[in-house]
Image (cartoon, rainbow, N blue to C red; front, side, top):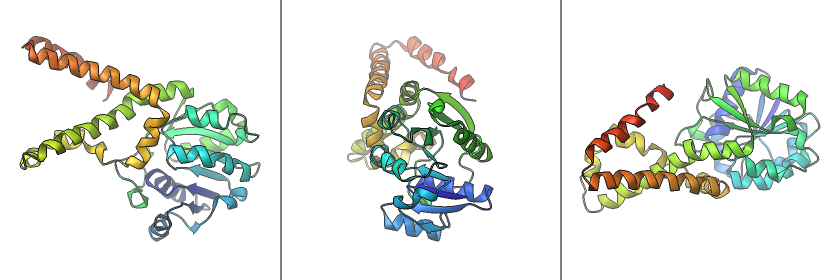
Length: 279
């Protein structure tokens, strides 16, 4: 089985690791514009060989794991180069733009729009880890536009990697992910910014930071090169989620300013039910 992974970072590299562990006959070809990433991927045995996009004509799978802005540009090029039996799937955090970009491509049936909800705050080949996708949800959009034979091929792969499958239309995906992922990253970045700016005047502030702060700002370690295009592509939904979040923050601030501590308590108590949702 020939698998071409385009973008050897956390997600692409982790997929490569797991595919090699599940399929004895898998040969992983790495494609990345960063030569250092390719060398690291070879040393870490994430990939077996270096390759280029021009060589994907004989691929069984092509995994597109690059920043979403780059994905929009190179996906048509990939589809132009593949064979009839090749399945291409992406792993990007926005789905509507990429689905619209290739909706009229002659080989649209060879593409599956995916978003595995898995990852860490780290990036690059060294961030790749085994079993990253075990028990994780993989959202598939517009599955009906992928030819059935390739659907079966993809679902068999995802099942063997331990993924749970959820189907969703691209607009709904981008709306929901803005709240549970994109907003979370912005919150983390801006909390980190606030504390770093304060730290200029108070050198001891990080000595007082505990596990709560660490877990809240963990996502601020994420790659800006990856997240800026995501915010750009999902701007409408991200702005809407930010407006609602800012409104809640402003309301909480006003309760404190007006000494309404019973209402402060109720705000937190009502939100505590998230423990029942995120078990």
